[in-house]
Image (cartoon, rainbow, N blue to C red; front, side, top):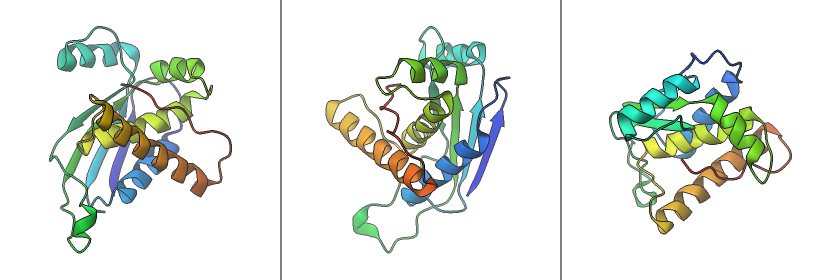
Length: 167
């Protein structure tokens, strides 16, 4: 899996954890190992510009996803099929927003833990998941929690996983 993490935010973040959880999420979703992903970490001003430009919404947000080849995980019924490889797209994260969300969450957690959650959230958006409808939200957030919990268990991390973030 070719994953680039580029921190343009000026804020120190755990880039290795972002890389690791992105790789874990993509493997868990059975995405071709030669697929490519870009994760960009930006400051609030840059995120606000993207949010206005692409969503026509004011202010910065926590995560945005920009799919490229519209890759989808293979269905469970299609276990024998080789998943296609390609460019997944870009995930843009904002550590300043993540820090506030982590501090305000019912299960207070660090900025880096929130960025890990948001990375998985962004990956799922790139793979076509959404949370506009209640059933979609239940599926996406359940999958998001399972991936974060699985990664945390694999890393030997203790404590509650961050609560789901709505983007």
